[in-house]
Image 1 (cartoon, rainbow, N blue to C red):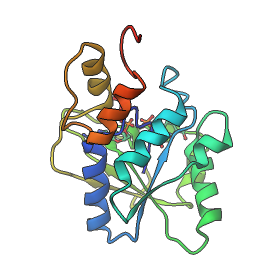
Image 2: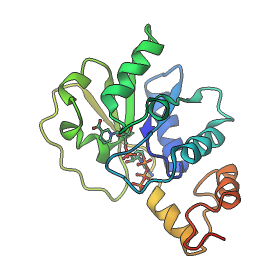
Image 3: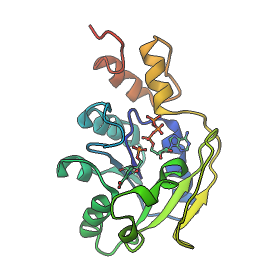
Image 4: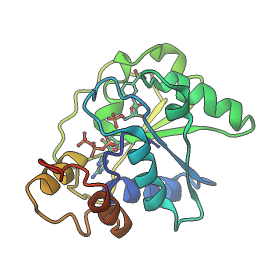
Amino acid sequence: MGGTFDPIHHGHLVAASEVADRFDLDEVVFVPTGEPYLKPDATGSEHRYLMTVIATASNPRFRVSRVDIDRGGPTYTIDTLTDLAGQFPDAELIFISGADAIAQIVDWKDHDALWSLAHFVAVTRPGHQLSIRDLPEGRVSWMEIPALAISSTDCRDRVARGAPVWYLVPDGVVQYIAKHQLYRRNPA
Ligand SMILES: Nc1ncnc2c1ncn2[C@@H]1O[C@H](COP(=O)(O)OP(=O)(O)OP(=O)(O)O)[C@@H](O)[C@H]1O
Ligand SMILES: O=C(O)c1ccc[n+]([C@@H]2O[C@H](COP(=O)([O-])O)[C@@H](O)[C@H]2O)c1
């Protein structure tokens, strides 16, 4: 599951769990972006990585990969999937992300080459209108998940204005955000 996870929240975790169940996956590998070139103001990748580790630690079928962080440079899914295919040569890879992200896939780097590396599962997200363009037949599965109207943007805005994020993100992530004073307007 690829994402910027700034921060990871229960929408991401429910989506991963639902896809794992529907597609009978052995495991879900969360892959935080290193440098998300469309989100240049993202929090540092080590913070996002550690929050993702905290959020997923209790689920034996969830793991977190550093491939996009350790590669350096802008994160492109073509590189993510090439690296993961090298690490898991016998695996059938399924790339999970939000439907809003996957709807833009024809704009992603080397998108023609992506289809041979993985099947794509696009999870729906409440309140987002999609314009889906020119996707090849059968390469993307669209999956509705229980509607959790949570976004990382809203979580960041809440912290910035002093509103709670309890129960929107895992408890350990709430504590990590407080400890490192992330997303505050005027950190001490
Ligand atoms: N509540 C949700 N339900 C379903 N999918 C979601 C939900 N929140 C995020 N996603 C999807 O998960 C993928 C990775 O999420 P990402 O890290 O970009 O979080 P986000 O909440 O979309 O962040 P931001 O608000 O900063 O854009 C995205 O493609 C996004 O569409
Ligand atoms: O490969 C690309 O050009 C590309 C462009 C935009 C997004 N992505 C990937 O889409 C996933 C969701 O990204 P984001 O920033 O919306 O969380 C994440 O894994 C990104 O690396 C990939």
